[in-house]
Length: 292
DNA sequence: AGACTAACCTGAAAGC
DNA sequence: TGCTTTCAGGTTAGTC
Image (cartoon, rainbow, N blue to C red):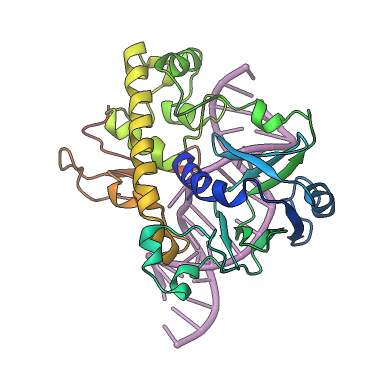
């Protein structure tokens, strides 16, 4: 689920629940490669701290602590960040979600064996959970001034990118344009779904050699990446209840997908059958007629 | 340097 | 019905 738009929607939802609250306890599952910082060290460092700001960089979330440290979170493939566990009025519930019974609101958002991190606060309000079935997500604590290898190698955030950023990156690349789009060191935040959608909107075949794109083509492609992501962020906010109900399924954008996951269905533009190929061991969907 | 592969995990869905 | 296989939106480490 989580590409840039999903991470951004999560950030907007969770930030108001996190910021300014003093952490009183940290509960975790046992050490696994999910924890780049060992659970004990994480708990020790976070107790008594508060997060002043929750920032998104590509698909990463960065909590800025009051001691200058940073809490790095990555949702991986199946990560979810949510708050629950108290009837405090501070519990953030979207309008659509409020119409559901409390039991429905919690569906899929209940801490369980896959909930690897729980933050408790001294105001006794809702706890914040990080749940991740596949454990492809990551948690890391960076001390004040400690650099992050992971953040430092990210390219420009996809939403802030310009055509020139992509154009420069594509010059000496023999790889397919889609592989370059997925390279987090170029445009941070683009994932498999939005790459396919943007390529469709820009009428470009995923396999096209990156170096063959003109400057104008790069401008167009970056514009489409941003258009599709901004639209998804917009719908994501309003579809959280669907997300909750259909726990584990797609985010809000799923109804608007033009090609992703639609192999064999007609192209919305020309009616040709959408094809699926494997590129860099990932599924890629495109219209063989519209995308050249 | 860039391109490719395997690996990290679990669960849902499809196939038989 | 139940067992087996396939697939999944991310990233890294290792190899060529």
